[in-house]
Image 1 (cartoon, rainbow, N blue to C red):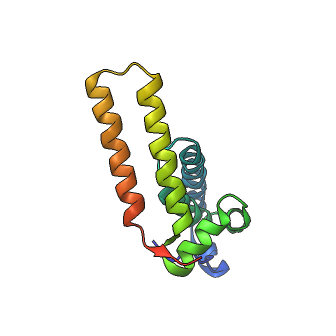
Image 2 (image 1 turned 120 degrees about the horizontal axis):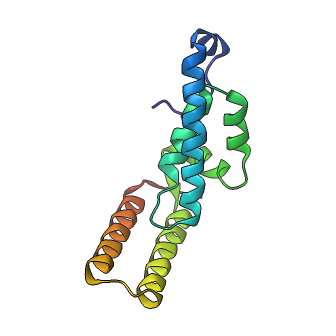
Image 3 (image 1 turned 60 degrees about the vertical axis):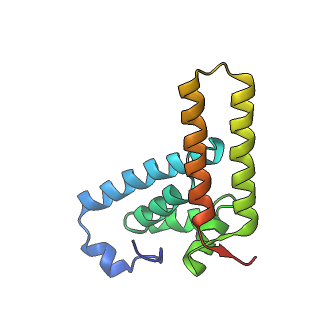
Length: 138
């Protein structure tokens, strides 16, 4: 994956229309998953957001610019492109949301033992991924 910088118009022109359409469809799918990641604590947002940005850069640079100016995703993309990391506050919020949602699910839902184990295991993996990301100042 590149640094997320916009693709040069000459490079975009050399990309065939089928490839551009494929990148566009992938960008839409990855963006939809990233949006779900904002709402669902066990689904990561950042990797899918980066993939959406990459795909839009190769299909519709205007959509990539729109994504970069987004009040929800713009700062995450900027931080990743600039420093290959996320802010400490983003990590803290992500971990707290995962913990709160898992605690709520364990308290309110009647889950079997294996379902509880799976939930805690997946949440642990998600938290580990968040904590492994490089922390940047901000």
